[in-house]
Image 1: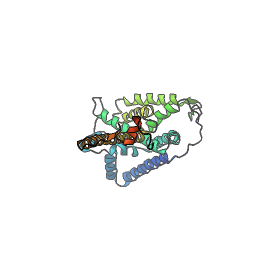
Image 2: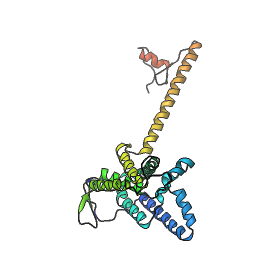
Image 3: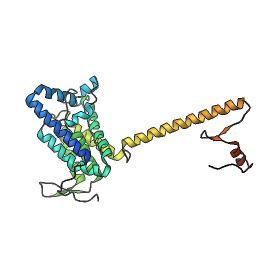
Image 4: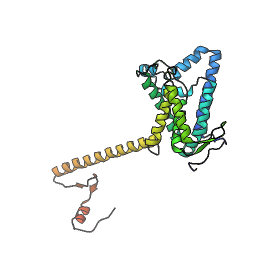
Length: 279
């Protein structure tokens, strides 16, 4: 699809992971509402252990909060706006990238936003505290917005209900500006830094992560390292065997990769017999 195409008012498809994330967030918010009406203490426990509280992550090792906080929301408006943005902009990315890479990207932004929040919570910035809890998918959603602005920046979006269109990159820049202004308001505390973290990690993923994704890049590095290790072991074993055979007045030869070189091949190299086989 051309990058400059206008994004119409037609609804985007529910791609697999966009649909699953929306179902999970809406379902868990419904659980929060039910627990709030029937068992407020249970809702408090759910939000305490599922939300992101920097002090609990660092002091008590509740590392699952780096992801689970994105499944909880504070209000109907909170969950609806986040899920609408995820659907409108994330579906396009999942279609183009594939479900596996999109999920990796989304979780990368969610975790990156959480790490940003924790770092800020322990900073000397006024009004922030490591005991403050953060909930909501905004970190992942703002990462999706950042990626959309970078990848489809010239695509025009109809700004419903306003009667005009705007390029995606300008819309994202306006939202970044609004988030920055809101974040540094004294009353906002640490929560909005998750938005900035999501934007930052969305930018970093698009600009610096290998095209096939972090998982593929990590697996490639692992197999390269493993193969290098095995080659080193083979060369080392070949040298030891050469020394052993020389002690028994027998000569064997290996090439630089540790592969055995038959005597016939050596004769051929030295201008001797032409017999033998070629691999």
